[in-house]
Image 1 (tube, rainbow, N blue to C red):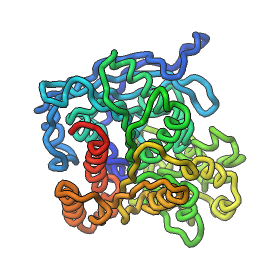
Image 2 (cartoon, one colour; image 1 turned 60 degrees about the vertical axis):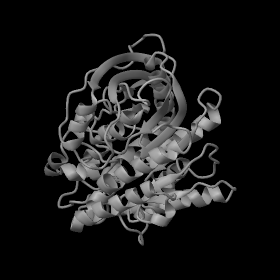
Image 3 (cartoon, one colour; image 1 turned 135 degrees about the vertical axis):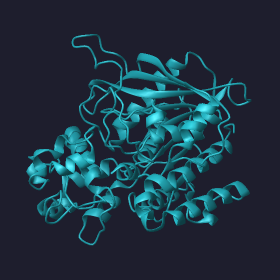
Length: 449
């Protein structure tokens, strides 16, 4: 089950779950805090280069990145943001700061705002790379090579005051990210930066693109964006959901985990997904699914307790006998309020201004690669060129030996996965390649190496 937890997001979670310290939600009756107010900041860890290399050697990242050049100080912060109703809520983030004597480890360094992938773990904390593979990847690939990183955990996770997660709610998640950026900069205490970069993987690809749109639309003067690199994200939520839900479609790996997140998010935000849970969920899942995720209960336990479909190793039993969702909900989907909600949060119909590229793999069975192509074609229809880098296809990548090495390493890893390549593809095989490509793209737009 640990591998299946990893596959549903961006090199998702290590198996150990640690207790997370931190503050409570907004004090009852206390004064309102402006969004982005830094409420708490604490040094969580100071990793030397040998520390980082030791962590990497015992993780999914072994051999997948060049050696660390900097040590990294990691802070855990808590900040004020807003929930879908505009009410004050708290969320947390990691702030990673390079350290050491290397040329890129001090002074003005590029600032990366990073959006993480889907995870079921409520205690998920990007400030804990020792127990979080995605956090370790970002520390290794970016912070240990001279990037200051701010990585929000999102509303509903870690010590957040919100009791659910506003999953793929584009405006709310973008606001959360920008508030985390504001608070993270405050926690840096004046440390100089040189350019603002945005990236994210899987769910975080959608969040990164939504954040770019909000930054360029509403915060261009305060936070001018240098470049953006969303990865393997569900940008075209309507078409993606059509591909999964319509009778001729194919259910993606992880669908029974994603769907409760989506339905709960949009029901809380818009109140129009269902009149009662049994309108959407088959029995007995209607009793538990609306409040199922995020959770620290292991997926094996949820299945044993009858809270997720049984005999479903790839989490694809979305419809039919013993599935999660009712036939009636599926039949009503084409003209449903749920589909309208997906349309509201689809990231088409706007124009990126900063240099932007998309990354993914065309054989992705979890977040279909058509999302990237649809976004590219939509931007191109208005004269905006956004390249799509497919790690499967060398000709889509820039020229140069380093890009050939990234492509070849991915192909070797895929071949080594053998018959298990599909279950590893989205969460284990593609992320290291896209992270390396992101650093190359950012370097071409002013970031250090």
